[in-house]
Image (cartoon, rainbow, N blue to C red; front, side, top):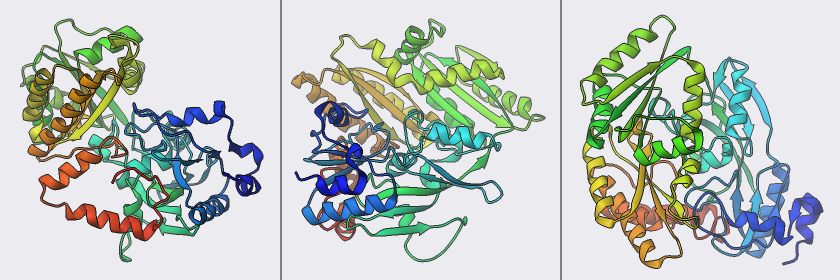
Length: 462
């Protein structure tokens, strides 16, 4: 490939071609390995992105946009030969408007950095994926990321006011704006959220922000039964309590944290619920006690309530690092941890969790269960050797069954990780189950309008 035009646009130092430089871009946080890129391009402004896209459309060069590389479904690696467009240089916070409750940030800004900046003003950006130390504004918008605080604040789509996007032909468009509501036809901002880099290149975002919670405390509850853990969340929501955070972990997850972080849990506990309640300083104790009484009505093994910021911070970081901690539970070094990601209504959690447990036993797999149980989001982390074809067939069959369990319980096959490469068949399964395969046809037509030559993230989603 002739790279001279790209070098003219971004400079020689921002066109990576040496094998040692481009090989890392064949991997993201998923278990997939992508094609080796012809080059990794690092533009520094929107006009450079526009020029790059014009050349790629003209020459039919496949482009995959990459943020922090934290995709769990293979969204940020090349499925076919082409170039990687890295947003690493788009790392500036451009405007902070506390009075109007928004911040303007470039696509490559990492979420933890954004929240460190906003904390100086007593505010924060609520979407909180576990990978927030690496996840970027653009990447999290592209997958409609959720995270720990989604129980109270919802997913990314609730917090995006507007976008700057470069289309495949190089056209730069603005969608949305700095106001909280508008009614001006089709919502192109919403269309971009969750599109996984298949429609355009997000270069800048206008994001809603919120005041930091005044005060919060934590309840940690232990169970023997997975059904009781699910019932506990259902009971809290039925009584009108919306936790700031509501997470659950199984024994494998707790053991992995013990082995990597030194945090110990009761030996007879099979499941842990971690519930954060936020309120004013004056009413926090009352709300914690109300939640605790509801939880005590379920079959608990033990409970701990704390408001100690240091203790809560340690456990919070342990939960966010759970994926990497679980690598300590592999039976051999070559194993991967393959993450399932489904969601069901809170009222369906007890039945769903029971069905998942039965399915794990049927397929004879080692699976760690955990997730953002407060919004019905369950992760099933499967330990598997990707080079073992017989085991991987069971893994794939289990993943399909996991999706079907979610659908039978009025949920979805993908909660917050997107479709990427991993869930193409599951996406079809969901629309087939809902007798709505026409939805895929509509999505393909939208893709053709935005990207007629199919150069953006080819091989993903469809």
